[in-house]
Image 1 (cartoon, helix red, strand yellow):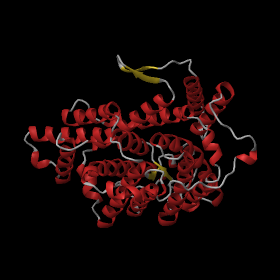
Image 2: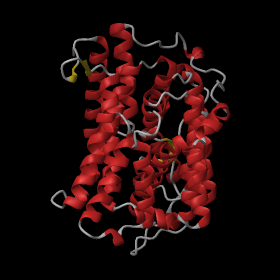
Image 3: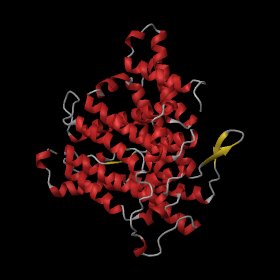
Image 4: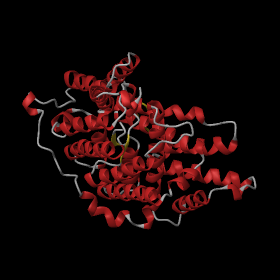
Length: 430
């Protein structure tokens, strides 16, 4: 569809479609953040408010139909790596997100984004997305009780007759069926189905007693709390974490925007898209906004493609999404009613959807396959996204050096490898 031939009605319909396909984040993001002690009600408010503001800013600045919300994978990185593995409070994690987003925005303003884009090998970029997908799926399996810890094998299949597992499996079956039937909002409807099963069958949910109990004033308990952790987040020890956030956020955004833009006809034959600088700048500011509000890094969503497929071509589509997220700010009791296991199906399916990049890696070539393999393998096994990225970068640099091609390695990649090498050193306190 040509942009000139679109209509306001089409744009609004496209916006509703996009919202339905990504609204699962209203429940998934607070559930993940709660693992690190972030107040559930506050995280829900921050998630909806952050998505509304960031999406509206994207619409008004770039006039593209791109919607934004807290990024899956980035929220898991904050919770399970920064908070649980490294032992930092969630306020420090949010401060790291603020610094990361401002750093990306600064790179865009300075025109250095091309350096960063050229630094990481393309196969490694694909591997980062795949590794994050497996990591997210593993988190979902754990939250649903489908896998559990084992002294003998580290992890094993959980008891499938347990209430949490039955609830998660029901939601997963419903989600997959709806996706097979191409029903918009399949992830959200899967969460709803799992919540109803968890409530009716096992009393796991806490559904509001009446329609009047659904609406509540926004909870602001997470807003601006990043300030408490700013000093710690700016320390040298957390520099690799900031960089890992930047790498994941930056390249995920580039892939998403180019992919959705291609589908919408915004990308020319040379692979360039008008106003890309504005898109990247808004995405960086949005990441910082997420940290400031307390909902983790906000980024451009690949689910925007559903709205583009429905005919959305202008910022009016994104403004519709923003308006719906703004309404959701007042629906905190609904998010509080959803049990953790009901969110698990959405995480598992999102992980599956992120596996596409694995087919783009030349596994028979050592210089591509081994760094990608280490990146994908170590993210879930170490429960750390930055660890996976770090070992992938180090392997890529080492292989090129061993083959006598050190001069071909981008200076930024050398710098990246040095940062990760220092961070993995036993001399660095953990």
